[in-house]
View 1 (spheres, rainbow, N blue to C red):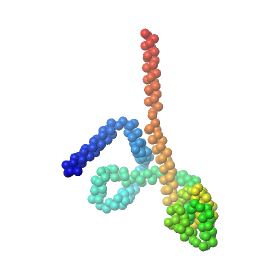
View 2: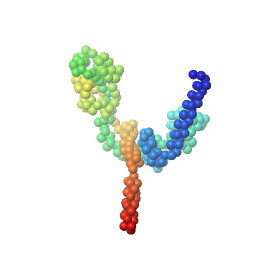
View 3: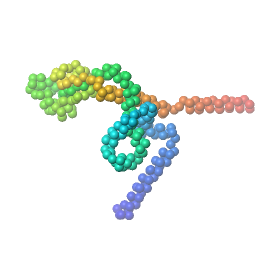
Length: 288
């Protein structure tokens, strides 16, 4: 290919790209509000947009003290590694963000935390008791194989002290736990399979559980540590986040569904117009 041909190909590719951009811009400018909603949903963007708008509406009346606002700025500067006014100005310019928008960004998470506390703080104790069994944490050792006879042999080796659990797991376990000698956790009891979670709940630390079939696998399990959940500050925030996520997902789904559902009023108006037209035509026929 000659230099002239290469240059011509580059020009054609550039022209094609510019045409694609122009078509996209024209399509966007011609979208109606309903079409825009459908497109946003098609691209998977509508649920996130609705979520963020719901959050903005929820925290609109939350006011922070000056100290809280300054703390928000400080935390944000640390996260973005902004150590001077020059760093800040450069960051704002690179992001195309105004100082007013910066204040919104730095205080939004603080306001959201305040909203969560105001809305669900009085429900945390009862919710904690409801969820405690899933929030308790465990450290356990696991071996999984497909062959029941191999599982029984390995179980007896460990039970008789011929090999350690970790050595057997590294040599024979057929899951990722083999890399850690079978050791897993600490994890919430809600994480393992319900059957495995029930085994761990009923076990004592150090107890070696005989081979148990679970689906295609045969498991050998030993509980190492049981860590009961405690309602400390960290747990309170975790539960607040759970309650908030449950609420925001339900509300977002409802709003999206409502926005994408054809309005009954439109259908009714169409029907009313059809009926009126039919009546008018009947009257005309009677006159003639």
